[in-house]
Image (cartoon, rainbow, N blue to C red; front, top):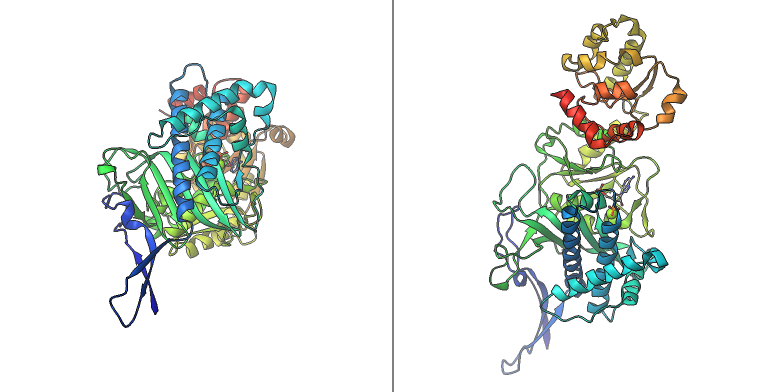
Length: 547
Ligand SMILES: Nc1ncnc2c1ncn2[C@@H]1O[C@H](COP(=O)(O)O)[C@@H](OP(=O)(O)O)[C@H]1O
Ligand SMILES: [Mg+2]
């Protein structure tokens, strides 16, 4: 008797978003069909043994869990945005959605995969909900979870008690590690985006022996159409579900399954690929919306060094990984500020979606991310995501910019020049225009802004890596340090080719100069704190001033 194994894989035809929404889920399923035959006689029956590929049922469970959790979050976000009661600073709706999403995902995974060892590394724990003060919130979460389960028409679920919800949340207490299987969950990734009404994601990955083997990203607000420049899909619809299994490619389907994308009950799925651009001038890059999460200055210096022309696309959450996996942009740069430790749930699902789409995810030194060390990722100074072709030059650019020990010729000459500017302080006139020396060092466009800092020149620190000149006023360094938000920074990051800009200064300087080439919102926050004004008002003033 001979046994032949036939691997059959329906290849999805997709060159990018919107190119082909006609594939059905059945067509992309990968199956192993083992066909046993008797070599001599055709009278014997043909035995077909169809066995699922690894992680098939885990993937189905993860998609179901993330889809339901997304439904719960959408409901809360909608109420949050419509509510007059909750101000943006009110964290309670977010809390409800975070816990609710975690409870739902945990409940569904445990129910769908009863025979598997069950471990989840997740962001939330039930400590606060077990306190007297958390009882009301716990009740709301339980209602929300039960309502969401009831809305899943195709199946009936038991009604969960508050204790069931607490237990489901506490499943997420696992520490992960290099041994065995662990789910990795961020119940709402991009909380700030969620509160703003922008992007967020439910991110669920599975680790096996420390490696990510599957990932699902539910992005309820991400358009099905590309958010990059080459928009191919005409739909305005939002809600994307990205998923990937190791060795099997990355795929995208509509999260809601609306009539447009779900004809005849067949869910349409496309295989996604990262964009294969190799010319940085044609590439665009993603970064965090929040400057506090990732240094916008550093990524802009790197992009500039690389020759990227397009402005950054700033969005919250791992929706960035999803968008990159389908070629909306070619690069995702993430440079947390000193002291921050990345968590595995912020990257596990996204990284496999991108790598299965043909991309690469490394730390800023080019090392692959190691998910086997527990909750934290020990990354060297940031995370870089891009395609195979751009990665080498991207790492080179990062090394040149990020390594203070190897300043470029341009940086050295700019340094010398910066020192000259300081010593030439006396050249500035009394109208506050530093035109005399400024013309020599930066473009005319910025002259006035620069000139108005005249009064604040005095003490200068120069950090070669970023070419940042810190120009303090007549105030003492101690005073400046007290403000401690980088707002006294005048950054000359791009050298002296006309890209001098201002991040603000002390109180007067910031009001004068924040409208430089880049706006640093921390200045606004700082200002708001200092003068007790709302950030929005301050920004409005700035807009008006600019007009
Ligand atoms: N100071 C910081 N630096 C870097 N990342 C931070 C940070 N503070 C929070 N984060 C992480 O950044 C995530 C959001 O990423 P992004 O900036 O890409 O939207 C947050 O996820 P949560 O919103 O789940 O807490 C949080 O884990
Ligand atoms: Mg997160």
